[in-house]
Length: 246
Ligand SMILES: Nc1ncnc2c1ncn2[C@@H]1O[C@H](COP(=O)(O)OP(=O)(O)OP(=O)(O)O)[C@@H](O)[C@H]1O
Image (cartoon, rainbow, N blue to C red):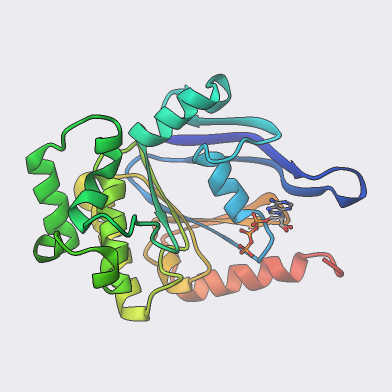
């Protein structure tokens, strides 16, 4: 069974003349323990797909399953709990709480749930992201790369079913970006984590086991463990097929 499955997913924003079909019947599965990227031209629906997959937004039609839970069967409260307990997030802008230390940010999902961190897991995750000597610093006292490493540790803390990353390298220099991608890669290889990442970054996508391409709100193609050149060629092919005037 895949870790994550979207079936005939559609998303319509607005109505009438102003309606935008952000997703038009996307069916795609994401296997457990792999690092997946979602790519496509600007406006092709990547963020909308990620938000619907992660239960941050409700699709207009179709279904999303995370593990064996169909998200459309959950009310808003249950969906919030599922996100808190079983989904990890890494955002472009880090989204750390400025008044909390790195340690407090990392364990925040557990604190909110009234759970204590497993000390062994905490130490393992903190060691993996290389933050052991920064735990008492607040986000403003950390570099962008360090802040994103805190965000990755926070995403892994609950041992989620899936980690979703939305342009996780978008605000980082290339070296920090490569470090964060290496961490996500290690989370897949060493911890068996399932990761789904939206990215525009060829080198980020080239870290992935599989890249799914969207075009105009539809699933368009995919590549297994592509090299950057393969990705460039695919994006060029898809862009060329976009109807004029879009
Ligand atoms: N809240 C919204 N209201 C109306 N239209 C929206 C909304 N969010 C997204 N859209 C539209 O839906 C389409 C898909 O947007 P989406 O952000 O998913 O694309 P994307 O591939 O992630 O783009 P980018 O790479 O530029 O971030 C676009 O045409 C966008 O303008």
